[in-house]
Image (cartoon, rainbow, N blue to C red; front, side, top):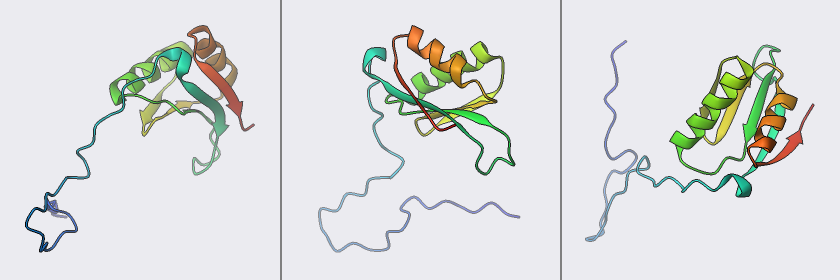
Length: 116
């Protein structure tokens, strides 16, 4: 299969406005990372669309993607497993809900548990 060329102005065909300024949807400013005390994180288990395998989800992180990646790296090292971080949520492979809640609480995050 050949790679498809991505258009720069996706979805825009023509504009009659003289002062039209196209802004790319990928060009957005990341939010400043809130201090740990003001972060409200939710930790829970999920196994939907994962063939029955359980992952621990951490959602509600507000901040830059690099800070999210750093937190995910710390959690993965703490649990000794793999995982991923994107779109403001962290996925840790396996059931490490209690361990993650304890760690985040010790780091002064506001943590709530959800799900099973």
